[in-house]
Image (cartoon, rainbow, N blue to C red; front, top):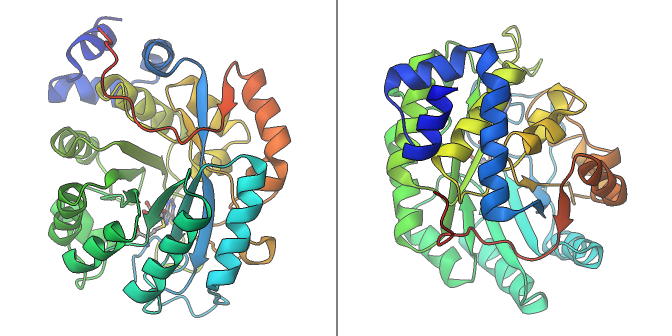
Length: 347
Ligand code: SAH
């Protein structure tokens, strides 16, 4: 297919080209094939695993889509202690994880003092591991302290790059401008930065998705996480339909062709909406999976959306079966730190 080939060669397209690939169901197969070829050229069949530790489900924000929003009074809240986090990481290390992703709501108790202490302890205990943080919007000084403490990477999805759409997904206290400022600051500080967006969030148009791709072209992130919007019963968006699975997979392929070297996860949301979602994501260009290392009793409480997969191959205890599933899909789980490659010649 001509557009796919142009995208592979140029790593970008006109708005109309992107529009066609995003919207056309028949584009999926050729896109996935081209994206998989690029991914194999840069990364072979390697799939990197990241151990996800869900620090806290307290959050001061009120994003309309998110199940752990402050306004959800139906939710039982928890936060992990430093000892909990270190125990999770030890378990993960023994299983072969070499990257830990500490994610959480914007809990006011996630102070700089707490987080820098946790990061320093993790790096002291596991000097061969990368520490990724995903704890939302903070001040430049705070990010700088976290970097100083040894954090290597930061995940902060921009969610949608269209101002008007952003305002329909978030209360007035939040702004796209601030989120973008955070991302640029994180880059400036030398973090490997991840961003991304939800596919099929309420009122999202194809133009919004094209704007997301254009923003990522500017940002040039090391990691890109996307997944379908999934409704949560105790949010204002309870009645909205979930995002489209095939469209999400096509966007993974588009991103792989735009960013040959990026680390792109087959996300939990993708595995939640379809049982074979993560394998499909890998076959379409994704090269990271993030099994859950959180203590099993809190996993059901970190509910960003309904029906989140939390056991079986999703949990770290199911790593063996996840490895087999990934091997059956034609890829191979590797356990090194897995930095983004920048120098491979991909043309
Ligand atoms: N507080 C952190 C972590 C947020 S949770 C931060 O602000 O970055 C990680 C991601 O989950 C979010 O960035 C969002 O893209 C996604 N998410 C939240 N609610 C969701 C939903 N209902 N459906 C799909 N993805 C969702």
